[in-house]
Image (cartoon, rainbow, N blue to C red; front, top):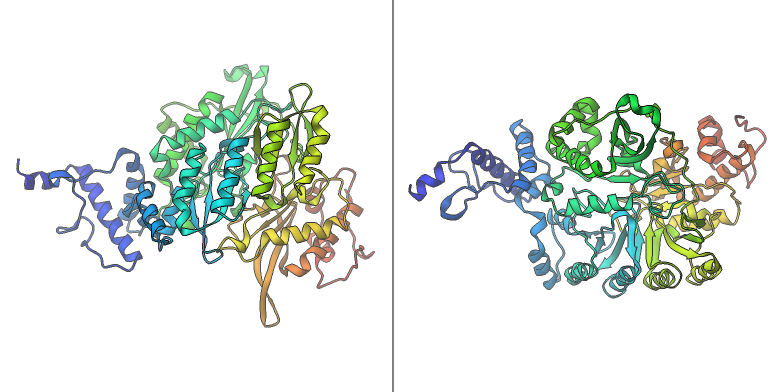
Length: 622
C-alpha cells in the first residue's frame, strides 16, 4: 500500500481523534489571536497531525479519556474553554525544555502557557508579584526534617526566604525569579519532593489525618493510604486529564480532622458493629465514601452509603476520577467540578458509572450499622498532646497564617531531629506538628519554639487563624489577607480572652482557598467604596463549621472596610462570651441567634459599643 493510501485509510477511532484534534487546534489558535489553519473540523483539507510515513497518530491511551470528553463537548456544538483548548494543543506534562529555554532567556510564560506551567507546580503570580510561586506535593502532609531543611534552602537561595503552609497540608515557595524555575524543580527532585500536578486541572495534594500512627483515638492509620493514592496519581497519566481541580482526603477518626467533608472524595473511617452481619459485612474498620464537597460553592461532601475496605480505597478513587474525566464540563469552568456532575446526574447514576468503571459492585451499608464518629479535638493541632506510644507526645506549633522564614524552618528541623523522630507533619490548619517528643523534653521543645518567634499555646487567637495568600501574591485577591489576619490577631489577643477554640478564616476572593464558609467567623475579601476611594475590606460570615458542626456560614455583614473589621469581630466575640451557654462553641451560638441581633452587635455603622454590649440587644438563650 502506498504512503498516500496509508494516510487516507483511517480507522473510525483515528477519524474521531483527528476531528477533535483539528477543532481543538482551531480553538487554541483563536484564543491566542492566531489565524485558524484548518477548515471545519474533519473537513477536507484540514491540517492534521500525522505520524511516520504520513500515518495518522491516535492519542496515547492515557490521554484518550480526556480527548474523547473534549470531542463529545464539541460534537454537541459547544466550544472548549480556553484552558481545555490549551491542554489540547500542547501536552502540559512535557514542557520542561520550554521551561528551561524561557529561564535562560529570563522570560515568564505568556497567555495560556501561564496556565500550563501550573502542571509543573509553577505559578506565575503577576501582577501581585512578578515572580513564580512553586507548590509542592507532600502526601498526607508528612515531610522529613532533612527535606524540610532543603526546602528552606531553596526558599533562601532561589525564593523570597520563606515558605507557606497551605490548607492542604502542603508547602509553597514564593518570589522565584524567571531564571530560577528549573533550578527549583531540580532541587526539589534531588530532595525526593514532587511538584508535578500540584496546580491547574489536577488532583491536588492528597491529605490524611496529621496524627496518623500516633493518635490514641484513631481507628486506622491514613498516611499510608494518602501515599498510595499519591503514587497512583504520579504513575497514571490519565489522572492528569481532569476538567478542573480535584481534592481527596482520608480521615482516620483521630484527634485532628482532615476536613474530609470539604473534598471531592472523602474517606471517613468508621467502625462497623457486630450487628451488621445481616448486611453480609464483617465487623471492623471501613471507610464511608463521601462525594462532592466544595465549600466555596456552599456544598459539603455527601454520604453515598458506600462502605469501603482500606485496600479498596485507591481503586475506587481512581474509578471515580475516571468517570469525572469522562463526564465533567469542558466548556464552562464554573461548572466543571464534581459537584455539578452529581447535581445533574444524581448519586445513583454516578455510582452506577463508577461500578461499571471499577468492574465490581460497591457495597452499601446504612450508617446506623456504624458506630458514631468520635468528635475531633478542635485544639488538637496546637499545644501538647499525648500519643498512643507510651511516654511520647506531639507538639502543635502555631505558625502565623502559615508562614515561616527559612531560618525558622531550619530551627524547626533541628527541633524535630533533636527531640523528635526527624519527621514534621503539616496540617490543613496551616500549622505543623513535631511528633515523638519525650515527656522530659517538652519544656525544652516549648522554649526552642518560642526562641524561633513561634508559638505553641492553644489559647491564642492565632492558633485558629487561616488565611490564603491574599493580594500580596495572588491576582484574584481583593485584600492583603495574611497581613490583615496578623493585625486582627494582635488586636483581639489584647482585648479578648478565649477558653474555646475560634476559627477565623480570611480568603481573598470567591474562590475561597481559605474556606471562609466553614470558619466560626469567615471573611471574604472585597473592595469597598469609602467616599471617592476603593479600599480593602471584607464580607463577614458567621456560624460555619465542619464535621459534627458541619454548616455553611451565614452572611452577616457586607463590604466592611478592613479598618472596621477588628472592632466588629471583637464585639461579636464579647457577645458570645457573655451570652453563650456553658461550653457552647461560637459556631453553635451564632447559628441560634437572629442575624439582626448579631448584625447589631458587630456592625460599627449602627451602634458604637466601645468594647461592651449594650443592654437593648436581646440574645437568644439555649
